[in-house]
Every structure is written in C-alpha cells, then in structure tokens.
Amino acid sequence: MPDNNRKAAIRPPDDVLKNAMQGYMRENSGNGLSIDQQLLRLQREFGINPSRASFLRKRASLKIQTVRMNNNIRESEADMAQAVIDLKASDPQGRWGVENVKQRLANSDVYLSRNDIRTSMHDYFDDEFNERAPGGRNKPTNRTPLVSAGPGESEHFDGHEKTGQLALNLGPNIGLPLYGCKDKYSAFIRAMTVLPNVRKEHVIAHWYLDLTEAYDYNIPITLVTDKGSEVGLMGKIHAALRLEAAPEYTVEDFPPHVQIPSTHNTPIESVWRWQREGEGHNLREVIEAGVEAGRFVPGSALHADVFNWLLPPLVQDRLDAFQDYWNLHKISKQRNKLMPSGMSPSHLMAVPESGNPVARHCWIKVNPESVQRWREELGGTEGRDEVMSFVSDEFHAEADEAWIGVGSPQVTLSNVWDVCTLVVEQIQARRSMLLDNNMLRLVLPNNGFESVSTRAHLRFTCIPATLPVIVKAKILNNSIAT
Image (cartoon, rainbow, N blue to C red; front, side, top):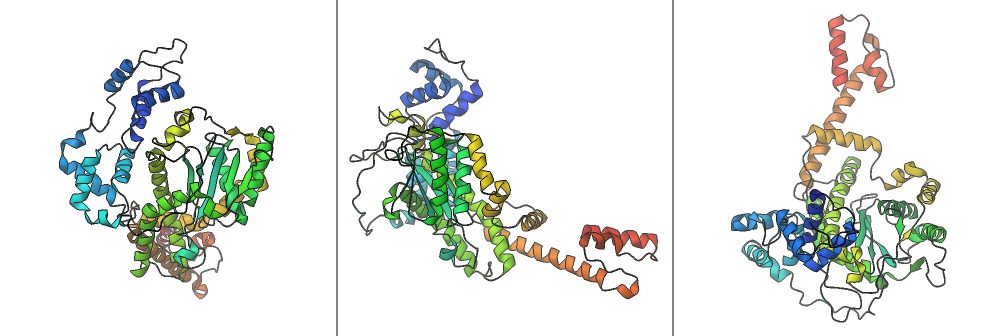
C-alpha cells in the first residue's frame, strides 16, 4: 500500500494489515468504519498514511469481507437463515433485536444486511418483535448530560448481583455476581468479570490489580463508584499509584476516587441494564429451569461444588461475548448528548478526537513494581487465588477428571444442565468406587492386611506377603486404576 508520508513507519505485513482492516469492518454493528475512519485508524495504529485510492486497492487485494464484498454466505438464503438461527440459540428469552444480532454475527465475521437479518427473524422468531416493544415502560428520570475530556479521564465501576447468591437463592456460597468498569468518554467496557463475591474489598482490590496489569499498567485519573464498603481498598490503592506516577494531579482538582449513589452511577448502571436484558435474562432462565427440573439439588455439597465449577466459566464466556458486542456496536446518535455518539466505543477509545476535536487520552502509566508491591501486601498470587476461586484446587482437579471421563463435552447454555448431571454422576461413581476399594483394603486385618491411613500407602503396602505373585500384580493394577 503506497504511503503518502515518506517518514512513516515500515508498512506492516499483509496478514497483520488484513487482520486490522477486517476488524474495522466488525465495528458499528457490522456496518464497518467509514473509509475516513479506517484511514485514521491505520495512521494511528501503524503510522501509515495511504491515499484513498491505494487503500481501496489494498482492501480489494486482501479480500476484506463486508456485507457486499467477498461474502459467500449471502448467496444462499438458507445459509443466512441458519446463521441467525444458530446465534439465537443463545438467546432463549428473545431479547436480541436485529441490530444486536447483526453486531454479534459480525463479531464472528458473518456479515449480513439489516434486511437479511430482519427477514430471517420474522420467518423464525416473529413473536419476539412484539415482546421487545417498549410500550408501557416507566419513563426514565431526567439526567444531567455527561461531559468528559477523553478516555481515561473518568472510569465508572460497579457490581451487579442479579445473578448473585441472594438473587438465585440456591444456598450459601452459590452465586454468580458480576463486576465491571466502563470508560465515561468512549463508553468502552474495559472489564466485565464474574467473581465469587463482589462485597469483599480484597476481591475487588485484586480484581483492580488484574485490570491494571491487563491494560499495560494504565489507570484512569478518577475512579467513580457507589458508596459500598467493598471499594475502599481499591480506592486507596488507586490513589497511591496515581500519586506516585502523576503527582501533578492534585486531590482537590482531580479527586482519585469519587463515591456517588448507585442511581447516579449511570454510565455503568446502563450497561448492566443492557446486559441483563440480553445475557442476564437468558442465564437466569436457564438456571431456574434446571432447578425446577430437579437437575440441581439445593443443600447438596456436591451439586453446589459442581455448579461453582461449571457455571462461572460459561458465564465469563458470555460476558466476554457481550463485552465484544458492546465495544464494537454503534452508539446511537443523540441530539441532546454532549458526549460523542454515532460511532463505536472501540473507535472512540482508539481515536478520541473523532468524537470531539479537543479530546485526548488521559490514562496514567503507573509503575509495575508498585503494582506488584500492592499485590504482595494483599497476599501475593496465593492470596489472589484464594479469594478469586469458586472451588478448591482439589475439587477443581476432581471435576476436571470427571468431565474428561464423560467425553469432555462443550458447555453451552443449551446443555449446561446435561453436563452438570453427567459430571455429578461421574464424581459420585468415582467416589463410591474409591470408598469400596478402601473399605476392602482396611477391613481385613485378620487376613493379613496391614491397616494404613493414607491412600498412597494403601495402594502399595496392603497386599499380603503370602499371596502368589500373579495375584499381587492384579491387586496392585486394580488399585492403581482406581
């Protein structure tokens, strides 16, 4: 691709360039960035400044897929309909509309027009259109328009417990609470995570350190949270890291941590509403259906452990998909909105001036060693694993073996309770077999067996010395197999 800027960096390889340009086409609900926006992104990300004509030639030579170009799926109405049907299998509540489906398909490099999707949805999911109609909802409270200097100036944090322990009511320590953060200027979701408990400050503090490490030790100027006690330690760590890295930001002019009522924390609260209307309702319905069908037994320690081993990775996978959808979708144009709109959060995060000519990045680069020192003060990686784990390491290993024993099935919202039942039965069978074998070995002191307390010794020292060699070998092999 010819470059009009002679001092530009070396042009990236075609595979890197193709990956970036294809990514641009996933944004704005699968409509892709405009050519001007793509040229700006190429200049910002790779330091190249091609002409419009050379860009179009390069796009053609790389066979970048769009709704209209290099798109074989649109040649078959059956294939288009099947793509929509496959995606909607993860939406049993029918919350995803045309625009939502379009963005999620684009995230998987399936590019269909709005008309294609609308036609398929009317053919196979026609009743959902009326169910999603907004009539009868309460009018929202009037809000003051938000303002921000750019990405990293202010970031909103909050927990969400609609799938937490109290909401699910399945027993103690059984819940899937969420915690996330969203940049105020760009509306970009930086993290959305399922955690064992979002009301413990050590959990939130470790999560904040994970976030800082994941984004190359960049933190915002100000954290905005609700007034819960769980955010106190996170706010303290943030203030200390910021003071060390950017002392020019005074506490009086740029407070490191602002706590406000939850009802005023609208940037992140609005995301939870979107998530709840889509993924959240689907998940809640699946969990309740499994309980009603008797697939989960409240009060059973084994069922609780399998739930806490099986569900969090599935929920996190759905959260990751929602985060991708949100960051790539097009923010609707709003006439009275002071913040930028009409483009994707990803683009606003990458090129803040595209939404406001005077906007700029406000992130603060902190010292990695300081982050590590805080981690050590919280117990190090062992302390992190202890508060961030849903089950013990021992049970995790036991459940993994059971899952492998039933064929390592892929876990989805559609089959999660089938997999849960298989794993529970497999663990029960393995434990029963182990118990029977141990009882057999320990119950025969009069027949020459030596009583031993540990499993390791049971396998190798509980064989009578008087038995024939072949019989000894069979007993030893059976004990190893169990």
